[in-house]
Length: 581
Ligand code: ASP
Image (cartoon, rainbow, N blue to C red; front, side, top):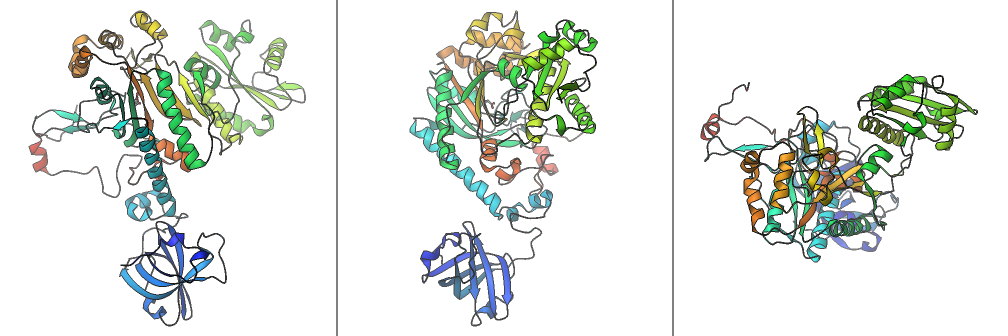
């Protein structure tokens, strides 16, 4: 085999050179004695011309055959401005057919009409599509930038175990039965959380890893059962130190990949974020904040609002500029159903057009209330206000979801913008209604705010933590925290989430023991690599940025995993497949 150039790199400056190329036939056209072939490799496509002296040799060649050619680069008569190599073609003098190909089950081009299941079953063919190749090259570029940037700052990459004890990130574990310790299981890491903290106890000081993480959760468009995190941990740091490292890294990546200079990242506390945007991962590419209208309705006679306020709920409002003519009655009914998914009982609305109010609650609200809304939200003709009256969290979340839907539907999002936001000061705990207990909002190794340590047991609902998220365009790009480094505080946090000391010791004793021997203060982050690459490549399908992804039901259609195992393997593991209670 001979190769002098990559196909996609040839230009007019190569005219008259003799070149040897390799690749796959992506298109073949016969014009009498002349045959044209587009030869594709990872770098792109070059057009080959076979004249009457040689075309006979490629008469049986079909798409996806593998060829090696040698020829002379010539200027094209009919140039193709859409192709980087469109000014030239290669007049072939020698051709070797290296391998044949059957008709492929999918068209190998960016515009393929294949169903996703077919693409995943034949992923090795799907991978030949330029779009997927571009994404994988981008992913490589970004991981190289990460490695180089962190290495230059003195971080070292350390691998942590895949077969390990359960690491609590709040998801379900993937379990692996042990052959030697019968009846016992390893868990695959949900993240390297405990190990990276132990690396800090071990004096590593600055650690990173492109770490595979495994979570057995129900899948969504931006989730895979296994994924990669850029996992970072640092000793002797506070929030600012961690944020500086991350901001520097993001600035570098966005400069190198997108050519944009990012401004300093905005910061907002969790409470403020929920109050303004009804979400802890708001898309700030458009404004449209939520407003708490409770005080306007403090003395309202409208029963629904009044009883919500009596029950310590809020009247959440979402004023939307200039959209009054965008929604028919039917559309507004659909929006009703939309907010119900988020637990809201109803969506009320007002329209202001031709200097008059209309809408579902016009009649039940007083003129004073409508005037107050008009003034407070700078209402103009064409504006609308949506309302949800409910418990604070439900009202915020429902209108927050509506805010992001309307942002998209009304075309308010500028795709070329990158809006980063640090969300800080998260609550320490969340109340789990099904289990009737508090659970760690981040993970139980997150440090409470120092002033809240004494309230951990007595007032968990009002404890805040040193956790932070970085949000980009409505996606949670990372979460992280300053960790607990004090054994007593760690024990208290376990207790607050309903774990007895014995339980905590049974599960995490191996981890907590380490805290006896001089643990440095430490903190870090886990950055979701796939989400970052999705944003950088502009796809909303996580499978476009993973070489061999799983389907929404967590299976690998190509390798047919998960699959059955033979009885000998089960016997060795001392396992019997039966029906659990
Ligand atoms: N382990 C955390 C996570 O996976 C990240 C961190 O706190 O560093 O979300």
